[in-house]
Image (tube, rainbow, N blue to C red; front, side, top):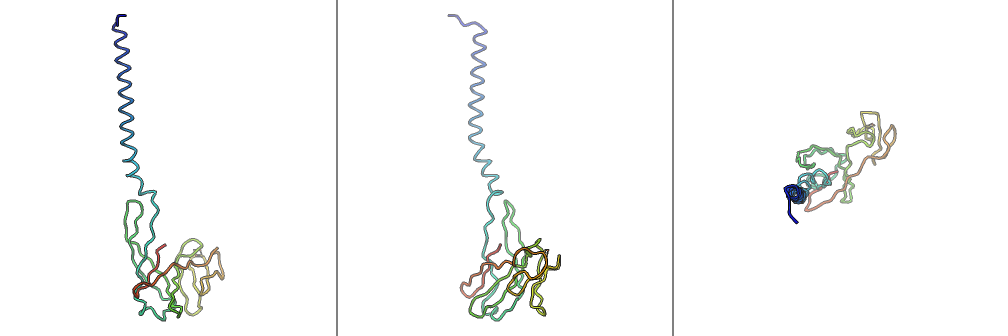
Length: 160
Ligand code: FES
């Protein structure tokens, strides 16, 4: 059987197509891990950190003491310093309660009203009792009590 120019052209086209497919597969095999590496931080869950609130001895007897702090938050590729504040109360038995200031309604910052012994949210009039339970207004849930720990005489709160 004699191969004519048409047969050779078909074979050449076939081999070019095979090489293109193989090249494409190799490129894909190399690209998938690289793309995964590049975009994975966006899907990674933000890890919560323990943040130093201060020396326990200095916080003893605190009653709804407002403490401001700054912590480093990593969100995807971006690492930023975020400011937060909480209310710290000494339970008197060596334990502390740390209240988030974020209102459970739409996230405004609540304030402790010493005279009324209540938390008050200025945005829509949400009121919480001294334990953080809803007393009035639209908030659907109590104020969040944040996880705390004492280590080496220092009070830490788990950043939410
Ligand atoms: S955000 Fe606090 S009551 Fe609406």
